[in-house]
Image (tube, rainbow, N blue to C red; front, top):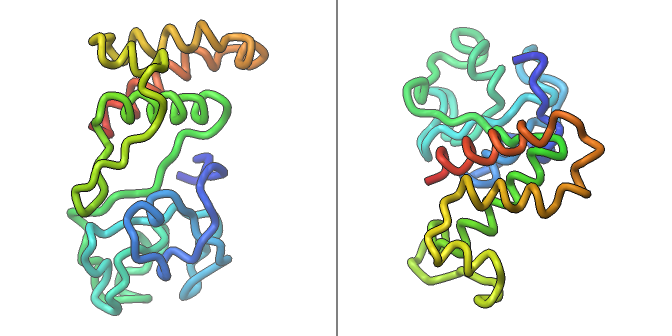
Length: 175
């Protein structure tokens, strides 16, 4: 946990966040809470429920939750159902995220707002839309895009394989 790269996560005060998406894209900006160092700790989303017995906060810094039980608060209520903010960092991670957003938008996998309205965007005549609607699988799409964009990522030796692996993992977990 200590050597994990959280630099892609946005700074926020985890306990002030009330939205799942914001929580799962953030790391705590404070240096400590109740004597527990939490600077750069990824935020934890407690499935929309109170994380602890001491407040109604639904988002808290991970280290505080894992080490604060019994001192900062009585009980970690969401121990069985929480998610930790995580986002792949580096060139590979950013490109993987970009490719997945494009793919999901055109496959209509993630195109509904909370009220059920269609929010998919983009130009329907694009290459992505054609590949997605033609049944091209995500692995082939990512491989094609990596080759097409290789000039952008060529200086980052070793990250092409990492990019492909990250993109497939991200896609699998998000569906």
